[in-house]
Length: 377
Image 1 (tube, rainbow, N blue to C red):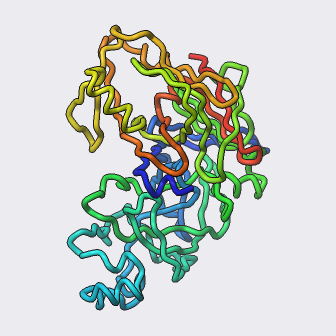
Image 2: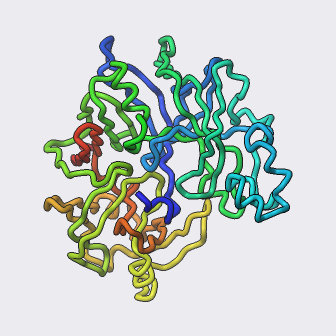
Image 3: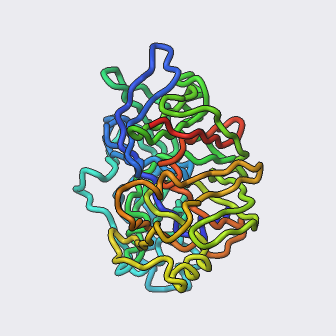
């Protein structure tokens, strides 16, 4: 999909404690927060099993980590010729051609940087660019481990890893959490979920995201705890992001039966069409608030609008989001919102924590389906 190259997509952070659900390892369960940051040392990298606390991401299938390599190791000798834009454009990777003043390089002494002394690390000559076009690096191969609680770590084998070497400073916050474990699909490679399934570590190539009463991410056997049947299944479009087709929506003062698409992402940011965001602002439905953590927040008074917030999928299922907007004691609701511009995939919406607050979400890699079930609180 070209969509992610055109839009800055927000991240999915997960805090995790990993446990096994029995000796047959039918699933692996992570405790997570609404941003999906892995914080329990579950994923380890390299021969020394380094801890990096990566994020789980639904918008990439790759593993990417911050790293430090000498310029010559990473980009050959091209840094010497960056003063010649024509030479750089013709013969060097894009990352060599950015002015040094616009680049953030990682502290070689940082504990969060990838340990290039792993005995299994093999750096390739293939260059890597993030989907947001804000981070650049090289591909490498190293061993990746999963550390089960109170058990020995097991290896998922030698794995392609993107070593993120530089970021553009002027858009640094877009990729600020660049250590990622990708959970998106890819026709070209297998992600963590598919590797675990192929090794027999889990019984199914399925991920279940559960919000209530505590965030959990389960890989493997169907996870139904705190989820109310029935599960409503929709097709996941394309072969990369978890994308679904929509036949309409109702949100605040606007209602439409126009067909569009939505992508499941993480973070606490909602993505909506730019024209709709502008309309809400011009109609004084949404009032801009101060930017916080590089996010644009807007507030509205929910007592002024009908309590109807939903999307209708292509197969007629209604994703009802009232539980999120009706939660809390205050009449004012504050939401971080990004504008989504026109794109070839007709994606209008980024669905994030608002959706997961209301529904358990199940992603099936073999059936290429997304399922939704109401939370049992």
